[in-house]
Image (cartoon, rainbow over all chains, first blue to last red; front, top):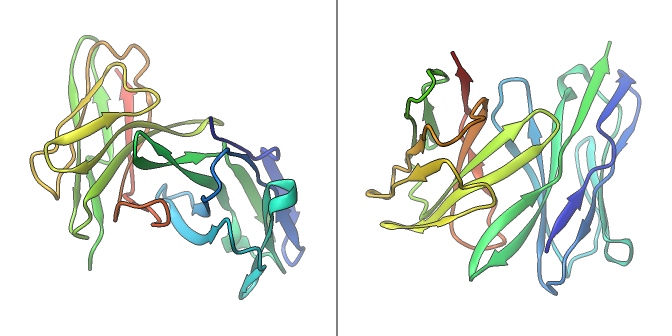
Length: 116
Length: 113
């Protein structure tokens, strides 16, 4: 069975601080994909990044960066110089196959509150 | 612009009543999904469909039903058998495949009267 653990339920920071959101996963698949989504107060989940299991290069996109470490089954997300607009719930998700169909297993999410 | 439309945004259900949540997409995606979100619980998969006239139960299908008569539409019915229906419901779609990100609608918030 697949599992995604986001141990941090809620994080509060002050604007301009750096913050890292942790994600640990479990899977028996050798090929899999990891995702991060952002859910602002409006409710819609917004796709941020996808990483496949064979690509361990870190990725940076503006103030966002992701650290994938297969050895520790982790896919952590760092926001540099946080802003109030970053306040949202962030979900880590893992793709898997059920009877030949691809589905996503989500973590429980980390609520990030950035105060001015 | 392409996207996923969920309606209504808010819905109230009386005891013993079935209600249907609408989900329409114009992204030409074959696969569609329904999730339930409860506070602190993340997203849990209710049903999914990868082709018209075919759908599969997810982790928490009891008390729910779906249909997939058209590629664009994947309505979810919350039946009276679902004893705790109060939650936020999200619909998603994608091109089938483990590497394809899912695109989400704005959600429907269902409450009990």
